[in-house]
Image 1 (cartoon, helix red, strand yellow):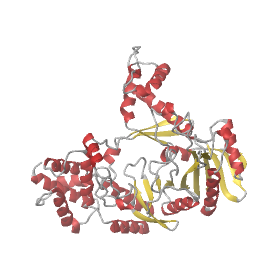
Image 2 (cartoon, rainbow, N blue to C red):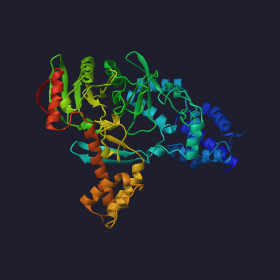
Image 3 (cartoon, rainbow, N blue to C red):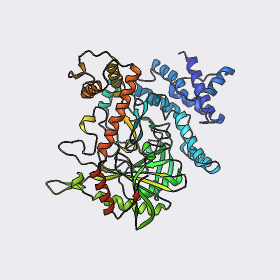
Image 4 (spheres, rainbow, N blue to C red):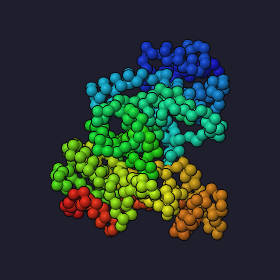
Length: 530
């Protein structure tokens, strides 16, 4: 690309920003000069846009094509040290950050929209801002595989995460030689806003957050850059403090719902194995999506004499879920706090549930916690789903008794966090190619050979599963049919994952143990589920 082409692409990026409302005409020279400086170009483009070019600009919904051309040119001219995805991401976040309104201007615009239009219109605008500034990289997210799987518990959602680019070996080697950074302390700290990034920490010049007051503390609202579902948001503590569930957690969840009644909001559990990938910074996740668990029926209904206006139920779901519904958030908070405290100390040896393990020195390790999820219903009431969790490990199940067991690790080995609990599987990117190859085996003519059983074979981890599929379906199927069979079977595997994570099993004995626990907490059963 020539210097003239580069100058025109800078002008095109500024024009894109103006058309999307990222900046105004009065900001044009400032933005242009900042981009020229970042890309080491001396002068701006001085031409005029043709009518066709203006129409193309109006039709653009993403800056990625412009950024790609500018990044290629920057690599050609040595502005980028190499062509790795990591270096390109660091620079394109910087470029988009130069077009963005300041954080104070973003907050002012959001509050103005919420006041004069509605909170929903304000979040619509804020979500578009995150997409149009390429903070949410929709071009990558579109690569994720997604399908639904029918099960007795409703349609589970399956996604294979292909949106996180793999680092090349040079970048990995460079990271190892870098001094350990301590700022920001983690990916969720509010200090990430505007941060330039480094090889092992993403740039965040194009990140904006909104302040929230939750239970008298300052928290912040932002969108997740990975968007596993519609308007996937994160609400994070303004201080770098670890995840810790308490009765105050429910106060904060309801505060979020009062601020954003069209979103659900939930917290990962606060213990390893059953928690999320980040336990070091207190945060919630939410968004605008209905999960299979939300649609699930109820097996039994209960009342608590001390909380007569709260409806309680056991949810018909693979995991053990107590559903509380009511109009008085104070009552819901107190009852949820009581259940959290009761569950933390609850043991039932017949159900393999131990609240604590005791070390030789007498130290006790807690195992019981909760994954809470809250929503506002159409009638204005609050609904709080409390998913009971236990992170105990055993000799037979060293990664977790209530965690995917070893025979499922070829599909899912990672923690079962908030998103997966509700029925959306986030599976590793390696599966995309592996599942395609397995479909190929089911579509091939039977040969009697089983190369996948050979040590070191890319499909060796799936060997037993492949043999099982061949025994059930045979070979020689049309490829599209084979692909669908494999997807359906992955859905069945994910259901097994959820069943393993359930503390009270979906057996008569397990459900009786569940009822015993609720009775211990003072609940009275009032009738059959619906």
